[in-house]
Image (cartoon, rainbow, N blue to C red; front, side, top):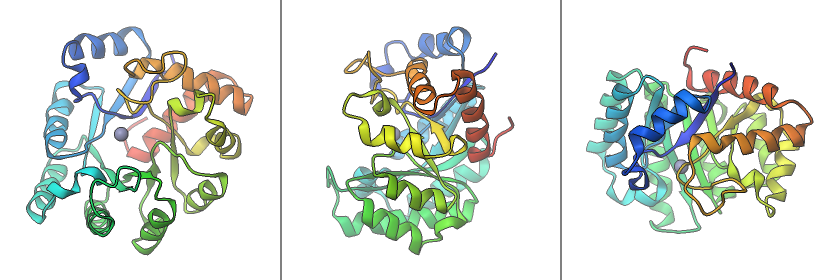
Length: 260
Ligand SMILES: [Zn+2]
């Protein structure tokens, strides 16, 4: 049976504290979920990922600091993340790192400084990168181009920009993370991107507990609800849902460099 590869989730969120164990059990035994990459945002989630990857066969993790959290980042933590990633083969990416000019929680020059430092860390570790970019299209592209550009595989997670911007990343060989937003009525821009982009560059993601697809918007998201995203991608590209599942599984394995 075809399986779901959820390339981006946050199961360390306190919103899963009440039923995490049962939910993950149910998702992987009854709901076709084959693999999940839990994405770090700060020191606590990095630590949690090191536990998750040992506790669950189907779980992989990343290390990295989200742009909203880089105020807590320092050289010692960079060195610690490097060491942990080297020692744990199920740490498969650096992320989510990037720029967030919507919340602007940290000054822009600080965000850029730590994005560059974490891109350098990914290069040293030879790991792919999960990028978070919100309302920062121009600077994100500039920083990426100035720091290796196409040399490192990247996932522009929860892609929210135009077809023109998608083309820039696709031309560099990167991937785009597609999730619940593609099912939204106001998700027209993303629907156009999905129609335009090749299927072999789509990474399926939930960003659980956030960005829950229609018809469950405003409820807590989980990897089982990715079926609604798969249905919409299949509709937009006029292919079968099996084709979407099969190809996105392969894409995720290639991106994270794990066995198919
Ligand atoms: Zn996320």
